[in-house]
Structures are given as C-alpha cells and as structure tokens.
Image (tube, rainbow, N blue to C red; front, side, top):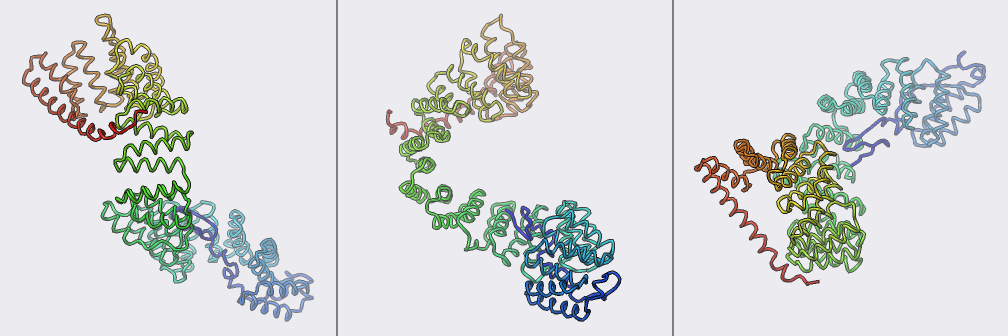
Length: 630
C-alpha cells in the first residue's frame, strides 16, 4: 500500500522529498526579519527615485499580511510598491512567497529570479527558487539552484537540506545523504534534516545506518511530522525483517493519523509478525479497529488482505461492512462465504450465497455454492450448482473444469467424460481440460484415448508440474501397439526440452516398453540413454530410477538394477513397487534373506495402500448412488 506525503508516494514507507515546499512562507522565515536593502548602484536609476520610507512601509505591511494568511492583500501591496518604482530584492522575495501561497507559480518563479538578478551574491533567491521548483517536481532545476545557494553560503542550512532532498528525488541517494548529514551538523537535532538523511539512507539500502540516524532524532510533536517519523521507522524495521518492530511503529503512526493507508500497512506488518501462529495471533490481537470512514473498496482491500493470510475471523467484519455499503458486491460476497467456511460457519456461507443468487444470479455464485455444498457433503446439490455455473457463463473454463472434477472425484466417469469432451472443444489450448479428459478415459479403461489426451496436455504445457505428474498414469496401461502413435510425439517433446528430466523419463520409459515387447529384436540403448539422462538431471527422481532399474534387469545387469532400486527406495520410502522388484532380483541372485525382507516390506506397504483406497471409495459411495443417470 502507498502512503503519500508532499505529493510523493512510496510502497510501505513515507517518502518526503521537500516538505518545506508545502509552505514557502515558512521555509524562508528568515527573510521576514530582513529589512529592505538600501538603494545602491545595484538597484539602478529607478531605485534612486524610490522613496525608501515608502518601500520600508510596503515591506512591513506585506509581511504583516502574509503572517495573517492574507497573501492576496500582501501581493496587492507589493505590486503597488513595484509599480511605484521599487526594485528591492527583499520586496521581490515577499512577492514570490505571496504568489506561491496563492498557487501562482509562474509569477512566483519570475519574482525569485528577480531576487537573484537584484542580489546575485546572496543565497536567498536561489534557495527560494529551489524550494518552488521542488514543489513543482522540477528537481534537476531545483538542485542547480540549491547548488548555487550552497556555493554562496556553504553553511546555509536551507541550501544543504534543499539540495539533499532534491538529489534524493532524483534517486541520487548516496550524494543526497552527504548533504543531509552536513545539514544536521549545521543544525543539530533538526527533525527535518535527520528525517531526510535517514530516508535517503533507507532508499540507498543502508538500513542499519538509517535506523541509527533516525534513532537520534526525537519524534516531533506536530502530528504530520510524527506520522512521517513512525512510518519511516516502520519501513526500516520491515526492511530489516523486524516485523514486530514494524508493527509497533505503524501502530504509533496509526494512533496519530487513523487513515486507510497507514492501517493497511499496519495490517501487513502485523500479519507478518511472529514466526509461529501464536505470535501472529498476539500481533493481530493488538490491532486497533479499522477506520470507520472507509469506503467499500477500502474495506474490501483490507478484508481480502486478512483472508489472504488465513485470518478469516479478522476479515469477516470488514467484508460484512462492504455488503452493508454495497449489497451487490459479488467479490465481497464470495470472499465472505469463504471466510465463514474457514471459521466453521458453513451454514452461514451457504445462506449468504443463496441470498445473493436470489438477488443477482451469476456463474461465480453458483460455483461457490457448489463448492460449499461439496464441503457439506451435499454431493448431488453440488453437481446441480456446478451445472448452473456452466449454464450461466458457458465461456468460463473454470466452471467446466470444476463440474468435470466433481464428477471425476466421485467416480461418475461417464458424465465427467462428456464434460471434458465439450471442454476440450471449447478450450482447445487449456491443458487441464485435456487432463480431465485423460483421467476420464483412463477411469473407463480407454487407455489409448487417455494416452492421447495426456500427451496433448503435455504438448500444450510441457513445463506444468501437474501435467508432468499426471502423464505418468498411463505408463503401465498401454499395450506395445498403443505406443506407436505416442512415441514420435514424446520424442519431439524430449528433444525440444533437453533439460526437462520428466520428458526424458517419459520418452525413455515408453521406448523401453515398446522395444522390450519386441523380444530379442528390441533395442534398449536409446531408452537407457534417456532414462540415465533423466536420473542425471534429477538425482532424486525415484520413478525414473525404478524404470532404469527395470531396464538394467532386462539387460541382465542385476547389480546395476539393485543399485537403482535401492536409490529409488531411499528417495521414496513409501513406494511398494521397488521393494517387490528388488526382492525378485535378490531371489535370482540367490540372496534369499534379502529377498524375503524386501517382499515382506512390499506386502506391508501394499496393504497400507489398499486401506487408503477403501477409505476413499467409502467416502464417495453416497454420491455414486444418488447421481442421476443423465
């Protein structure tokens, strides 16, 4: 989130480029104590003709009016004196200040340039022009004028501070820090100089130095400066990964100025605080209430921030407030339903979603209601609502996928197959639709069609972890004849992605099966090369090691096969297949004790897997029986 000060923004911290530019009048208060300069050769013939007493009177009257906030009246007095022939640098300086207070920046700029022409050896005109140019965002020009002022008066505080802040605005942070450090030497304890120096160090990533400088500056009493101080303190702590310290600092800032921007940053730091759930809960417990005057979008942003960090209880009041402000806000409705579900209020989530559907039906709401029904064990209702989501928004791929997954996850494979068949036609470049189609074919034992769909998904997105993992499903399901159509496609994928261990494995494994089925005429060298490459690219690739071990065993290289099976078991101790195959090889090698141990372990793991499958089938029995045949 962004905090703004002096018209300049920065994520997570307060950026102040030249806060003295907020009030040019205050920035040059020393000028008010200065009397008009006496006529000299510098002022020319017109100055000789000007009545000095009148100039003095105009000057003092204008100063008084400016101090009362009557900039327009002050400017009128000064303009009258100028029309009368006054050519005094101090008077033009007042004119520039008054014009700037009125937002007449071009007139102010010209007045300060007149000050420079009338008094070129003084720093005052350059300083005030630099302040004005900084306020206008013309930092290169501002820096040049502050350098001129610094050259004329090296110890001038305004020149040092202005030059440092202008350079910081130009992102020349190291150079800026040097001038700001000198400003603090000239005026020890000055908050603005210390703050700007610390900020420049922070932007230069010199975090410890920034923290040290800021610690030497007392938090000011005026609220605006105090907010800046605590906000920068919080940003430095955050950058130093001191989330608890950042939260403390932002709480101070929020207590002074309970604004949306500061609260959002305070929430972020509080969510990050603490390495454990208890520590984070303690940090969240210290959070003050959100500001009451937030609009719906602001309440929504904070609510989503809480929900995105698994703080559903804190998100709920804000999301409820959004719906009181905007009852048709679908984003708030959907996320409030999620929050209710997360805190165990599933019935409230369902009721909320149903009410929203009555007011304004949408695919997103039907899809949410289907997910809630699924979580509540209402499987038939879930299917109906997934179907309604598809009907409401037939161009939304998410809803097709979710409907198909609902069928697939509950073993109703015919409807799943139809959903994904339509999905792949409507969304031919979406890999997961082909995955759904492939699993549906696989479930009804249509293995060649499953392999074709899996391979299409792989061709669409060969780097997707989900796609890569899913393709392994078909390895043991195809007959030798089925591989003929798939092998050229796998070879192209493996060749086109030479550093992809999965693709090397898939092609190597498929080729091994195809060639092994040919008996003595089969050639296993290319398959071995790709499987060895897969293991080399990813040494912890257990499945590739199992396949390579099988190939070595087929080549009668028993010890190499044993070594690969042992490595596979080390990488995946819960896999039962390598124990079984290792036991068989040990038998062939007449190592019967080792064989018995491996086969016993295989039986133990195999029984555990069967129990998992039984539990899964029991959970979906109701759904299978209740789903309509259509």
